[in-house]
Length: 232
Image (cartoon, rainbow, N blue to C red):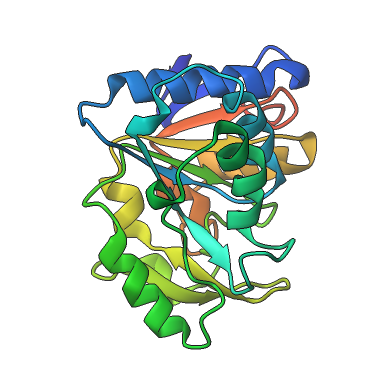
């Protein structure tokens, strides 16, 4: 783990060990948590799914953990596009997690504003650990380049729009990222290397590169994703 002027960057030994090393980092963050009930904000997509597969085989007092989401597609929970479904299949079901400890965004609501307000009320004051990803366009959660929610200072959950389908989303906003006790940004693949370099070492412009909202937190990269960084 090497400190940079942009935060902390962990570069895994290889693409093959990235998920195992990331799971180590997650469990270490759990151990640092000072709360009896650990609030864990999950990221969607295929990248964290690999980490969830590893976590599902790890020993921990999982009864302490409360699971939340950083964003969701506005689809039914059984949809293959649902972040909740992915987490359920890769993490909750293998671990036998009680659904009472899973707080999902209601992406199926016709009224997205209602869904956002409801989830905002369910969030803890601050996550003990928040996982985020980064898209090739620099977005994180469902905060896409140019989104008005990137400048939000009051609301904590908002209805958002993506540049790709399904376009309708729900997302946490910057205050949730800023208040989280620990944040880990998970990125893999050389295809995202140029954007990782811009997010961590480029000019400050979260409106263009929303993942810079977590620039000064902990980034966990595989060798491909880190390949364009000047500081290694």
